[in-house]
Amino acid sequence: MRIFEYDTQIALDDGEIRGNTLTVTLPHSAVLFLRCRATTPETLKIRIETPGGAVEYEVLTIKTQRYSLEEIFEKKLLLLIPFYIFSHEGRFMEYEKDAEKLRGLQEEYAQIKSRLEELAESGTISEYVKCMIIDMSNKVLEHIANRYQAVREGVKSVMGGRVLEYEAKTIKREGIAEGRERGIAEGRERGIAEGRERGMAEGREKGIRDTVSILKNLGIQQQTILAQIQEKYNLSSESAKKYLSI
Image (cartoon, rainbow, N blue to C red; front, side):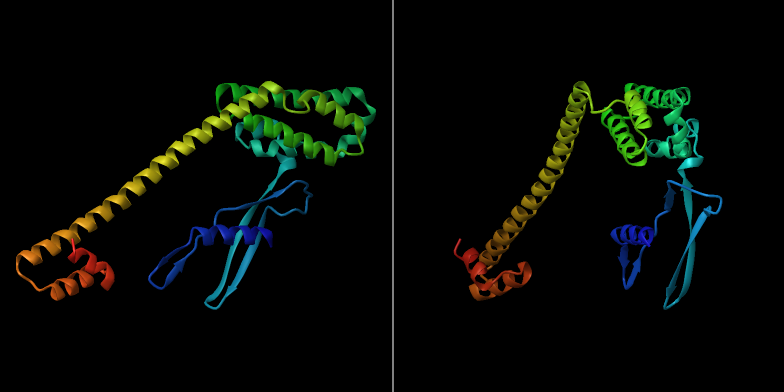
């Protein structure tokens, strides 16, 4: 149900009305399964009964437990990293009892952190994104391995706990720079819009004054001039009278 709610909201936000027709385009979505079984389907089907007939379409499913680390980085599916721990969920008891097996899990997470740092250093992702992935990974770990202390502490010892001070400073600088650029862009757009509005207002004002001047020079009666500028410039009687007294 929720995916249909999300899809329809996006479709409505981007909807377009032309004449008497509203056109909405549903996005290409997917459902993320953190845990899956052999019976978990490859696609889900949504069927909509409308007054004009039924409409059906399929939604792909993504099963995080099927993605290897190599695939995640190769396909740039970094959003799956916090949930990678689910692929090890069935072996938590083994890791808890066997230090050697736990070391293998730690090595995988050392690889994850190393590759994230490489992506951050190359500018492929920001320091902020790197830290957010690590933070989310730790949060997911806290919940899924809440009964396995060795697993929690072992992975956290590799991934790190709180964001380090230098990382926080980097994130702050990036945020300030991004905010400044966005502010400049918005200011420029606002300035253009205000300039356009001011120009239109000044142009309208000049047009009214010129019209009154020309009609006066032609000897047109004031009552006629008043009626002309009221109609042409959509002025109230009071506003129009002000131009006659100038």
